[in-house]
Amino acid sequence: MTGREGLFEGSRGFSWLPLLLSLAFGAGVSLALGQDCNWDLRNYHFYNVHAWLGDRYRFDIAPAQRQTFLSPLLDLPFYGLIQVLNDWPRLVAALLGAWQGLNYYVLWRIARLLLVVAGAPGLSLAAAGLATLVGATGAALLPVVGSTMNDAPATTLVLAALFLLLRDAKNGDAGSSRAVWLAGGLVGLAVGLKLTIALYAVAVAAALAGFYGLRRFPAQAWRFCLAAGLGLLVTDGFFLWKMWRLFGNPFFPFYNNLFHSPYAAPLPFDDPRFLPAGLWQALAYPFVWATRLTTVVSEPPLRDPRFAVVLVIGLLAGCRWLVARRSAISRPWLGLVVFWVVAYAFWLKKFAILRYLAGLELLTGVLLCAGCLVLFQSPRRALWAMACLAALLLATTRYPDWGRLPFGDTVMDARVPALPPESTVFLLNDEGLAYVIPFFDPRVRFVALQNNLIKPGQDNLLRRQALSLVRHLPEPLFAIDSRTGDPPVEQTLREHGLERLDDTCAPIRYNGRETTLRLCQVRRATGTDGF
Picture 1 (spheres, rainbow, N blue to C red):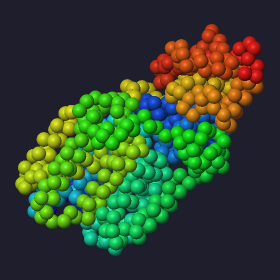
Picture 2: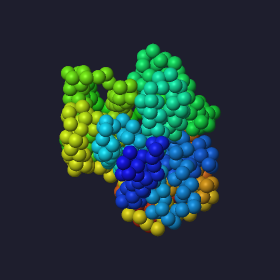
Picture 3: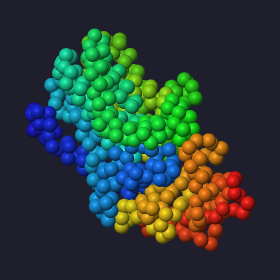
Picture 4: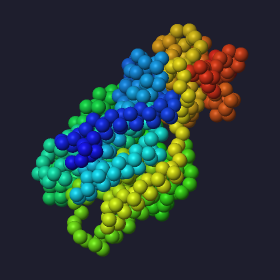
């Protein structure tokens, strides 16, 4: 082992330098992007911990929309940091970014494990570096580093599970079950923290056939699924039980077409906005967001050729391998390819939201580098081709803007008008509003009248409770809405027999900036009793 390589990999496969570089990179990206102010934070990431700690699920009525009822566990670190470091926004951003930078370290370990050029440790090191660079700079994960969107922490656990299985398969421990138990537990923990990670659980389970062979697959899959179930219970069991006890649906309100909780409409409440319309569009999808700035897989526009290039290089390398057939594909690579293909197909069918592909995006560099090594007989030429691809990808990627602010004096600071204790505030549209709730007196109740969960014309318990409060609560009553005279807001007021007292309106300021929100007193319009 050369001295240079030893800086990055110790005698037992570990060195502090890659870990420290990964943490520093995550912190640096977070600081460069600025203070997090994404829509999900304004809607539910801050409020949900407040609701959980204060047991407000029946007191408030869905103020953070259907996201009100997502587990608060991944948001606890951010909420805890705010309690002690709210006056240190840059430090909070750096800590969140460093924590999420663990993804890059695990990615590095996977790249070092798989991208080995025989007899050339320097080339192996370069290959791992290029693969890590490409994977770490994609449009799915990099823009959310240091944010509360929580894709990064859950992805770290999935990558760690995948690394354990890859290492086990490479070591030839086909009969080993320890790695499978550990990997299943990690994936289960991740799914419990963020339910959309379930796509990776399915993919890892399928990849076990590649890692261990079809003969051992049933036993290993059984171990994996049991461990994953236990991991899920550790991180989400408490919350699933709470939702079942309160609303009769452990995933409330999601999958209510299956559980039929009386508190919400019998709908799945999934998000089909980005799903491809058919097979041909699905096949073309990665080339759409590779070639132009688009919102086809994301709310804010982006461009990223990584997935399209992986598919092209993978197809060419696969054809080259079939023609050459010098050797059978190794179990680690077979398992990795199965994992990537299954996860991508699941994502395309269920989500088609690029953020949820962060785990696969991180692996794009590893797959591209492997493809280049197959296509070029000379490892040096392969790495030069990989370097050119890396430069091309970095030059053409355009990142989505999820909402960042210049750093202010505090992380979270909403200046809200003082209200009488035990007041009721109605929320009138589906903007992200719930971030202001923790700054009010905890005796103030917040009731949604119109959002992505509660809508006029529905007949369920949440809707009926909201209507009962509108009709029977003693005045004064208040409402938060947009200052722009949004027509849907005016319609919501009319539909509920309410009218705004415009001379009572006061702006709500966020971190010293005047937002588009205002709080106004409302009253029941004349002649609306029993509407």
